[in-house]
Image (cartoon, rainbow, N blue to C red; front, side):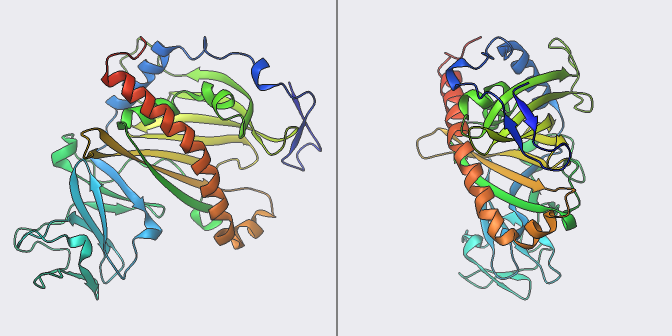
Length: 342
């Protein structure tokens, strides 16, 4: 062990007795077996999504204006109806093709700015809303024509802390890759302390629980990567936690903190295919939702200052994803050129 608690159970911080220089860490490349990671990825990709795709943060879609998205090459428009419910559908006006993301919302009705066609969420002139869901943190849309799976009534959402006693934050970024490259990155926790030494130290994968690499099981209920890691504050002061990584559906990986500070908190990574860019290469949007909770009485102060805390949380996510998108983009580049190892 390289850490010890300053006061057991009272403070979340630990003091590292003998910080290990980056280059003298225990190598993890043998444990990060490409075949094992690939098998976990294959099982994740085989799990049902019910054709649901993440659009973005719930708080970004308000009652005053529509928002435009692209999912699998399709224009999507989303807005709130008169009762505040999420509505989503094709972003192309069925009349003459106007961009409905530039329409206006009046009393919950979307009014096209070209000729005034009004859409209240019900079928109209060939336009029909898609199934949509707001889970309180993220908004989702169901695209059966693209997913081509058996539809599910609701998206597969991981268990989260009670939102009334948590701080939620959403970060988004776009990379030149496919969703599987994002998922593969998250199913490789072994890279954490090597690739992100500014954030993680003393990382150990304690257990790879679930089906063997040769199993064809697609259930995620008994499959997880259990990791012990410390979040780095300074060279010696860290916050140690134990976390479990699971992939409940093909475009999502979830990290649950099971021991340590923030027990019960989750970090959800969602990968939404956008389609090809002008250069013909695929684009994928990463939507990372952090739902942080703590049993400490002082966490109420953090929740009261959530408006100040969220920019810091996004800044941390942005730094990590600058590296992790480079990882995912590199993986796609090698795969697409037939040079990916293994």
